[in-house]
Length: 356
Image: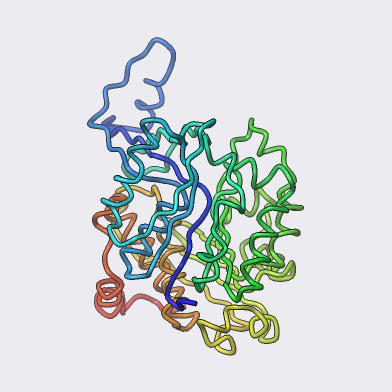
């Protein structure tokens, strides 16, 4: 086992991002009516989805990273490896070709200073299976991160059995597991799935769970606050729950010492120092340019802290720092810093910020 290797598996796509130059959100939305034309700026094409966003950030943070996903054999599928390699030259790619389904893509409408609108085609992600992840590769890593089951039909149509079995196999091999969610299209088949049941099935095999508060509320059908939902997830079996709160930072809750010491996390962190904690980590103040991918980048910061063997407090600060950097830089993979650069900023201008 490579104690510093992370496999990032699940949803991947090509993000098509036109630059929006409207003076206001209202004028932009008004122009999206039938018969209207909206002038936009140049198009940016970048790799997206959980695999790309988390995997590229981890690689740029210096973590040995392997990207596992499924692509089509179309022109976007041919372009995807080059986009990934350009963004993360050191990351290893393990992409399965799907000859029946096209490559997933997203058209992302994101005006500076506001949240984004995403038009998403799941494509080959719908056919992802545990067989796409080579057993030898899985056994060689310290941590497996899986993201975005809501846009992967194979991950939810069986109620989470595939994801649970994949995580169970990983943990039996001594590999810690990490899970993230996304928001389902309210008119899609995914929105009608039993996500509460999915989490009840998968969280007992999940060592790190890092969803947003909106994703949790949608999954459980509740308006409970972050503390209550995080504790609910811990009670369901998740080892560490990091709830992303946007501009309010993140809330991290962890399970008991007995639970964590029995999990594969013990191979990479001091579980006695991680157990029974509540960390309310504020967001660092930055000028917001683009929120796209910030949550995934924050997850990468958290996982980098885990792989580095850092404390839960340090890892939470790394998560907030990584997310802030992404928001400030406008979600450009090329601007993501090294872990050393993040550490210097944490020790510098962000050191005076309120500690959790």
